Amino acid sequence: MDRLSLASGFDPDSLIVETLNDFRVSGRVYTDQEIFRLEMKHIFGRCWIYLGHESEIPNPGDYKTAYIGLRPVIVTRDENGVVHAMLNRCRHRGSVICRAHTGNEKRFQCQYHGWVYGLNGDLLGIAKHKGGYPDDFDKASYGLMAVPRVTVYRGMVFANMDPDAIDFLEYLGAAKPFLDIHLDRSPSGEIDVTFGAHRTEYRGNWKFQAENSTDGYHGDTVHESFFKLVAEFGNKGGQHGSYTQGSVDDIFKHRLNGRTLGFENGHGVWESPLTADALDNMRAGPYRDYVDWMEATYGTFRTHEMLNAMNLVIFPSLAILHGQFRVMRPIAVDRTEVSIQFFKLKGASDAYNNFRMSGYQRFFGPASFGSPDDVEIFAVNQTGLQAEEVEWLLLSRGMGRETTDNMKVRTAEITDETSQRAFHRGWKRFMSF
Amino acid sequence: MTCMTRADAEAFLYREARLIDERRFEDWLKLFAEDGIYWLPIDDHAEPTDHLSLIYDDELRRRERVYRLTKTAFPAQTPPSRTQHFVSNVEVSEDAGGEVVIRSAQIVYELRSGDDRQYEIGRQRAFAARCEHRLRNDGHGWRLTLKRMVLLNRETAIPNLTFLL
Image 1 (cartoon, rainbow over the protein chains, first blue to last red):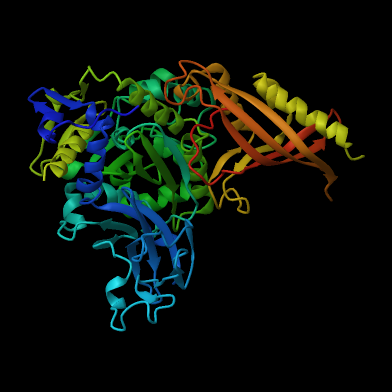
Image 2 (cartoon, rainbow over the protein chains, first blue to last red):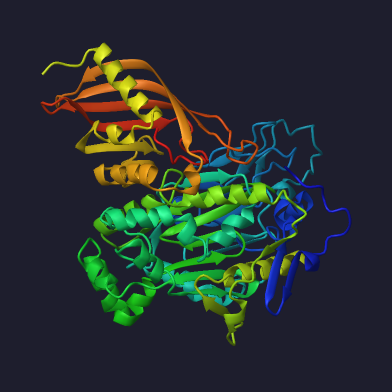
């Protein structure tokens, strides 16, 4: 189900079209093989990509594999505790040199001809070196290729294939406080990302999950089943969302509160405020110590703000929401993996963390009551886009009520497509140079 | 209390499989004891609070699951899954606490029928699993205290597990 590649040159301006009250995206952005290939270069070759969290590789020798677009990557911690990100590709003939997801090794040996690399990527040994290569063969030039830029922000490892990319925090820009809120919810300021992953894949373009992670418009239809379930059973088995309990109508009404935000470079936020009685309800359960700590630390007003349901997308392929890191991994133009890692808040009680985990697992994961419905829609989307004579997808909702502040942050109502427009403006920018 | 015979154990597993395949989900719920757990782990060796599970359902979560399947419509089950279970390699033992333990191997085939040229529709998938059923006789019959299914593909990216296995 692939389209023909673009016959002529690639022109982002013809694919994302914006006027005062209209914003449209060409279906080809989701279906064209050639555009997908360019994305791997222009988007995943230039943007800051999340590779994992330091807590996943706490000890010297620990490693995990990850991907930057299609590029296989190894993230290691070396003997001195330094984190490295390297392309998982032998410098000899191109084989991957590590085939496990995670583990602990002193060195990596290529399975093909046995070249050996250290935890920092240095080429340590060439099998049967003598006579096969000149005596002055410079092993130092043939270490694993390091990902040119790696930065660790509060334990989160981000990498960038572009040596000239702007620094991560500059890239994040005005979206930074929203990332910090997710981490500041931890009493120690630290999180623990060692609980495995819920992995799924869908037959659709990777951008659908990125757009959807801050979409406030789809919930009442795609997740109506879940809201009926909450109305029927309450949240005894685990809180999800900012609404506590009520009828489906009450939930729908509450879901009209809040906002969406769009940032420079393509980042976006969806934010739904706590209900008025939420803090009192939280005190009745395993939240009690936690809410007390939060109020003592941040004050009541700020506590309310910080406990809002808030989803952040860091362009292009990371979403942070409901105590999870969600990574969208493009596999092909119409095939995407979504890997979700739940994290615990270090310093919060086991009872509270387990309650969070239970609430998370109610809505997220391939067998849960929420996220499988989202990914099903992405396959539904991809199928519909084969009707290619209908050129455009409409992403204009709420343009007329959008405001822009002096940080160029755009804000509109919670069901508006503000963050999706920001995503596509970012996409267009990175695809244009 | 005597241990179940293998014939009794097979009959229990066959009936459980049939209740799911015939979509008699409310009857399936009644197979469980009130403290029973329906569990599909991702890490075979971890506690459910130390690693995410594909499914970790206590009684409430199981009722929610069946409510969602029987009383609501949602995209991942529109159209709904058909399933066909195969049960084999049945072994029966009794543990120190007097619970009967049935070990088995199962394959669950799953397919959603509809406009089957669309993505996700008309795809027949097979899920192989090692199963452990633990049962307690409460005087009125055998009830599940645990149904634990360890899928062969448990750590891989798995689409749509919103049907009962």
